[in-house]
Length: 445
Image (tube, rainbow, N blue to C red; front, side):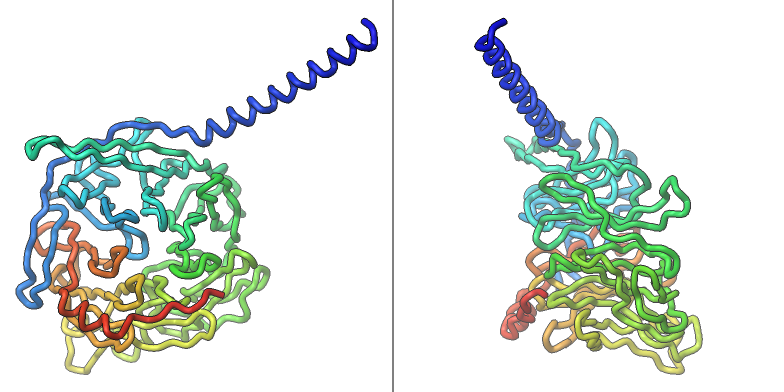
């Protein structure tokens, strides 16, 4: 073979190698981008509308079947971004993750040929559902085709994309999206290495890249509740030592990756740029600190107070915490008096609190299943609806919000069994509170 022939052969090999590499890239990207599509089971409507006799608020029960149906946890997104579907979970046969189609009232069951889903939330942006299947983190998009006639049934097609697969461990929290729509976070435990502590991961929702935010050695332990700030894409929080309603031990020293003190402290925040967990609220011994959720302006809502009354009575205010300044204020006061029975006192103390995205409202629930609204600027209270739980038994409402600040969702026993209920804020209240303009969102830090 002469020199010219060798040169041509070398160029041919180079072109073939380039084509092979290009094909490999295409195959790899196609494998990530390709979505499996399949139909979802669609069930007939079972909704029921009720007017609250005390307040006049409109109540929409999404479910009325005798099985237990529960809304997503109060700091997750129950509504898809365009509010076309409301997510919930069900204990009914072939239940699991389900959805309510707002246009028709029909119910859909999320189940893939490879199994069901858990740990779900609606994406912060974009019209998709984020969920866990085993160790897979999955994005699901829906195509809803309404029925041709009122006697027919809509058809719903799910197209899924496996974002990534956890290499080890098991998810211990629901997925939670960053407010800019770039990431989802979750807590992971039960690694094959027993010496490894719980870990908080983030998933890039575009590329599927999985990366570690921080590991959480003992103490303070790990209570889950991983959630992203609703206004700052760099901040997320998690709960320390995790019994529900945990009380604090001795005040801790400075928090850091090596000196991770604060046994019993509940409220922790981590900046994903620094990846160092920080205890943002130092509770005193015996203080109740529970059920936190992010609101506007880098504030965290939580329930609790110092306990100065004999058990089993509980004093619990709704409070806001500015995670940068440490300033705390009471926006929904709890109450206790010596003659009060625990049941009577529970009517005026709060257990879960969540705020609307526009800053105009905070909703809180109590052990009787009452839902109270507090105006975001003035803190004026408005009883929205009541008696959705029997004191001492049943599921807590754990009230959450829609995307527009017009509706709240919660678990209700009002109809005799456990159902998912949506309460609409009366227009008169909305108009009166609109004059205050809500809380203006501050520039993120």
